[in-house]
Length: 162
Image (cartoon, rainbow, N blue to C red; front, side, top):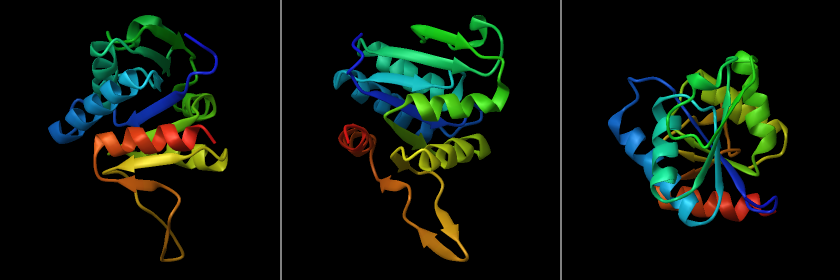
């Protein structure tokens, strides 16, 4: 692992109820990141996070989970590195700070918080079937919407280099 390789966070719902389409997209994103030589960073739990890690691991990539609790064992089985923080949802700020770019796949309110934190920190966020932002009734083009996992990986890597 090199300090100069890109770290891309994949964010999304950790729920077991996550739509199969979102899980398949997340797995493809993880695979694409691994094939590009990026390290996948995530919250380390299930759902989108686990699917992305599974895709990355299957392609020989590296995965890091920033866990909300205090035990490494709570992380999904596809993690190479599990970092327990004991921070709960506040660990979202660590994920946003550590990433060069973020890819949001679908997601719930936790994903929305990661998007907001990343944007506040000046980090690019690429969105695949995720939140759309508006302020005072007007769309805000802060999340770069894409329509495929491949496009998500390409845009995140391109924007993360800046």
